[in-house]
Image (spheres, rainbow, N blue to C red):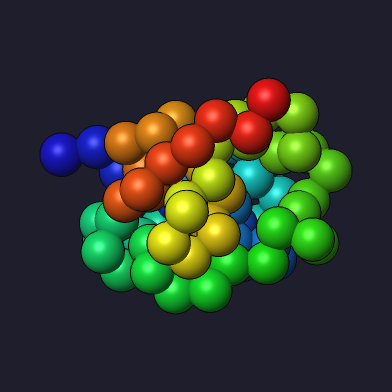
Length: 74
């Protein structure tokens, strides 16, 4: 099973711990997707890497499989 991480500051999710300013290990997508994320305060280190957002909760992620209903940002 792939480990997943969420930034403790802005809520962006990633498979790579090193891509986040304040990484926190999460169990699975259902533990964060659907909970409100705040993309307005997205950490600078992830802003360029985040390519997808969830149309349900607004959470931002690096890849579409990390959120339940994804659309491409760029």
